[in-house]
Image (cartoon, rainbow, N blue to C red; front, side):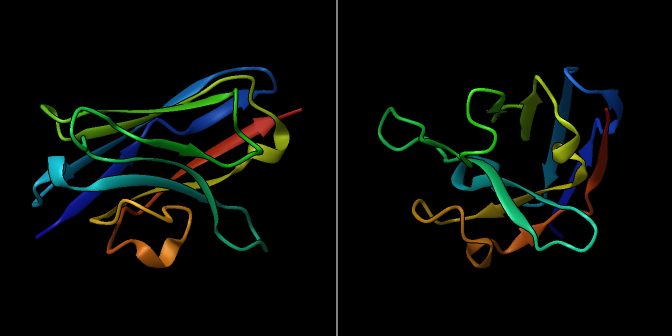
Length: 127
């Protein structure tokens, strides 16, 4: 049974930082691309970041324009964990954050590509 468990959310002031962790089990983690999505109340789920497995010697990253330069996705395949480091947080970053897993390497901003999802962790940024 595949499980993705997010942690690290919380309340932070604007300009602050948080790191989200997503621990995976029940899947061959190193063979999956991992994505981060978020959903605010009354809004649709939106792509935040994605990180692929190693292809050749390269791991590919993708970010939403709204988080480029502020958020960094990384992963530790030995720990079956993907991370989202969030810096310079803004009130508009407030949302539930979800990690997800896919075998795809392209179009990782498309949430329909993902087959496994975590339950999410709440991030609230106060102004």
